[in-house]
Length: 165
Image (cartoon, rainbow, N blue to C red; front, side, top):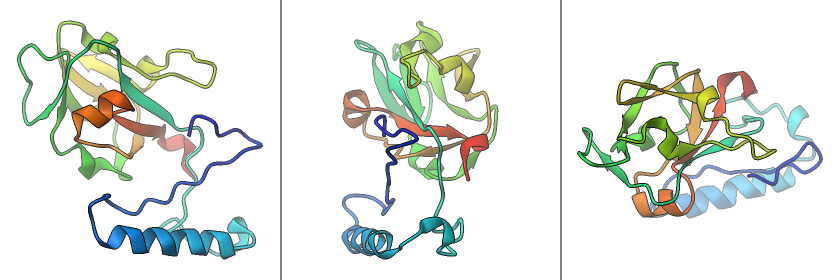
């Protein structure tokens, strides 16, 4: 998603979990529908099946920091994310929503980079004591409760609600 520009668009078809048997058929149907639609903007697709998320960014954990997914703060962890983070995939999350807890490094254990590699963490998230909270209303997607996947890639993608069409 980081390579998307105004001249080069990126399409993501959300189909559910990789281990769900219906995901493969849904992916095929979604891609087939996309490839056979001449003009997406004039196709009459509703926001229930078609949504534009402009300029998504990634929440990442910095190198050498620890990450856990559990129901309460993990002592000694740099970042603890709520175990049920997947429930927020594609739903609107209000400002001040708690998504987890921060350790001794605080919010500095995380990063959100813009297209020019500028740090944007404080535009999207804040620390309220040791709580990791959203700063603005946003939409998350591709959130995973798998710490190895999150450390190797990202915790999730996000976009401010003002960038959802």
